[in-house]
Amino acid sequence: MTPTWVQLGYLAAAVLFILSLKGLSSPKSARMGTLLGAAGALLATVILFFSGIELDNLIVILVAVIAGTAIGLVAARRVKMTAMPQLVALFNGAGGGAAALVALVEFLEYGSTKGTLFLIATVLTVLIGGVSASGSVVTYLKLQEIMTTRPVVLPAGRFITIGIAVLTVAAAVWVIVSPSTLGVTGLLVLSLIFGILFVLPVGGADVPIVISLLNAFTGLSVAASGYVLSNVLLIIAGTLVGASGTLLTREMAKAMGRPLTSTLFGAFSGTTQGGGGTGEDRPVRSAGPNDVAIMLGYANKVILVPGYGLAVAQAQSTLREVADLLTARGIDVDYAIHPVAGRMPGHMNVLLAEASVPYEQLKEMEEINPDFSATDVVLVVGANDVVNPAARSDKSAPIYGMPILDVDNAQQVVFLKRSMRPGFAGIENELLYDPKTTLLFGDAKDSLTKVVTSLKAL
Image (cartoon, rainbow, N blue to C red; front, side, top):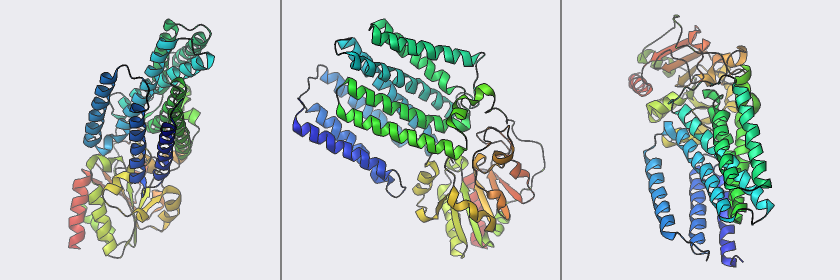
């Protein structure tokens, strides 16, 4: 029987998890939400050690906790904002893998002695956790560009994936009907293989959606492991993660403008192919920092569109300085935030929050799109795919159907780019060749610094 104080402590931890998710729903409360979630996890861990359960390998556990804490602290402090999605993918994979391994150990310890429900929970934990672990590693490799960001379709890939899926389900049934070490080990191996095949066909622009989906998978595996370990808090925490990950996946798929099935399986039918190249040899209109400063300084309304390139250049503070100078001149300035700008939801919000950008200046796509037609100048810094008109008109483009920021409705558009290289989706942006578009080539931070200097001289 679990002591009453332990149950109350777990209840408090569960409440902290719920409050954490609530806090993460807004940039203003996100920091507090993160701290509440961490406090809940710490409380749950401490309670476990003093709950009276038998710990046969206490030294090993403590060493693992200390090592994991050290790795987590170093990784969190050293990771660049541009690499945050990759870190999330790795941590998510570690969570799914840990759940799968814990369930595997429990099965080896108790086998079928705990009944059918225990076996079902074990099978679900191993299967879902394995898929999440290996799939998350592939998303990391794609985001880090260690492997190609394009969809990878193996010869007869559709049939191979279906075959592995059938074998995985068969292994799961086998473990439930006839429990054996060979069966559960085979299930883990097959789930790891399926996780890889599951993510390989996903194109780079859709990888953030898959990260969110795999996060939901990890939550489900943790919830199932909670039943395996008879731990109610794990069931609650896993269910919260699974539910929030599912909702986020749904919202991201909606933001991309196509069904989740198209994101996951479109490569097999060719619907996520297309695009490519490194920039066409066509004339574009370019200008220097002083010209851009004049365009901005004598406008009535300016909208700033940040993208992944801004994060790479670490130019968020310089962009805010541009906005402050324009505001001081009486110019109306807003930031347009696309739901999937950067590499994951909230990426740009966090980046700009680091630069102390006022929250009220951050406008979501639905709110800001009607304003572009009344805007004198749009300054696009490091964004490409989220402003690419091909999403509306080119059915062969991998971003076709994705709602975009309507920057092409503005009077003038200024792009800050290093080169004519396409965005993450690998396709050309016709807006770059529009007569009303001006390009300022160079590193975003360096270019914005020169624009700031020119603005101060106006």
